[in-house]
Length: 304
Image (cartoon, rainbow, N blue to C red; front, side, top):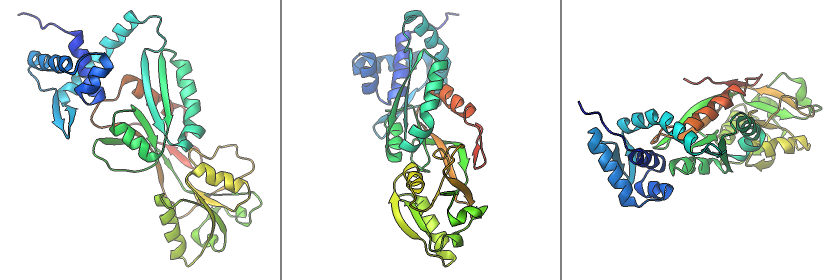
C-alpha cells in the first residue's frame, strides 16, 4: 500500500487559517496569496478525504478533524522551528490581553517569571478594558485573555481560574475595623467609594444595602478596584470589592474584612472557542495556576 505523502506548506496553511480565522489572514501571515492558501487547504482536504473548515458568518470555523490534526502537528512544527531557528530566541509568541487591575497587580510578575523559565518564547502583552479583552479574542488578535466579567458570547470560552469572596476594605482606625464580618446594615451612614455603575456588583451591593433599610453615602465612584482601594488608603471611607488581585497579602495600612452576604467574584481565562489553544498559551495558563496559591479570601480553581 502506498503511504500518504505530507506537505509542510499545506500544514502551514491549515494552522495559519485556524489561527487567523480566514484565508486572507493566513495569506498575510505566511506571505502568500489568498488563492495559494485556498488551494493548499483544498488539496489537504482532498488528500485526507475530510472537510477541515466550515464557513460561518464570513469566517472559517475549523471542524473537529482540523482541530485534531492541528494538535498532532504541534510537535512537528516545534521540531522544524528548532531546526530552522536555533539562534532565534523568539520562536513562539503569546499574544496576551488583560484589564489594568489584572495586568499591573498580578500578570506582570507572572509574565516575567514565565519568560525567565522559557527564554525561547516572546510575549506581546496588551492592556485594555474587559470589553476589549472579549472582542480581541473573538477577532483573533489575541491568543489568551484574563477577565473578571462573565459574558456569554458566541465563540468565546471562559475557563474559570479563581473564586473570590467579597471583602470590605478600610483604614485600620475605621470604626468598623473592630468587626470580623461586615454586613449591609453596618454600612448605614458610612462613606463609601463605589465601583462605577457599569459594574454588575455595584447594583448588587446597592440592593443588599436597601433590603436592610440602610443607606450608605457614596463619596466617589471609580472604574477599577485598584483605584477604589487607593482612595480608601487615602482616607475616603471604605470600599466593598473583590480582593483578587488588587489586595496584597502584606497590606499594613489597610484592614480587610469579609463581607456578607457574599457577592461572588470569579476570574476567567478567556480563549476562542473557534480555534485550539496554542501550546504556549496552555503552558502560560499552567504557569499562572501553579504560581497563584489561594489565600484567606480567594480560592484557586484547578483545571478540569
